[in-house]
Length: 278
Image (tube, rainbow, N blue to C red; front, top):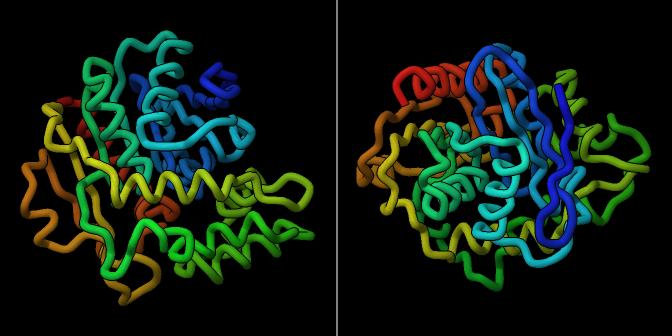
């Protein structure tokens, strides 16, 4: 495992690389997440070489200044590739990270061999009633993290499970590792401004998905947040697109697609398929 600090506009993006036996896979986390999101994937597929940045405004990259957007993240990923000497890589993005991956592939198509998109990236209409002005309210649970002090990691884990991660096991040691990376002195390293700006870009920005020509594999959850909740993607959303493969993930919600052994194993198998055939 190696850690690199990559200069970008406004500061340094921190990147963690776990070297396995595969060629590199650039992995991009979601809107309120950070690079420890990929701990479950590392556990299920230790052969994968994962290049995992903390996006600006999150984790070790929380102090990168300047506006946040899908295009800004894409430019940061280009800088990461340059710094690590990678001409091209397979890219996997989860949730908002899927939309970043699509933007990156559109802006820097020669650098992306294939895309694996996990419950994100594929164009989707804003939820009913969502406006640009109400994005902050919809993501209030994420923003609330930044306004609270947590006296212990266990307290923060309970907060996460009680709000946005209801189907996860609070006793999971990987979830604890994930939570520990969020916290410094009881405060969550997450920019609320970046969360709102990036979520707004996801729902109201112009998707470049239909410009892409590389193979695209898509995995999607049965539910959004908790069992029986409406999924992020309807069958009609998925059927309308020409995708290399579509992998349903029954019995999992949005977080469970990567933050559980079952979800991570499915993502690992899909990445292996991409590595084998592009």
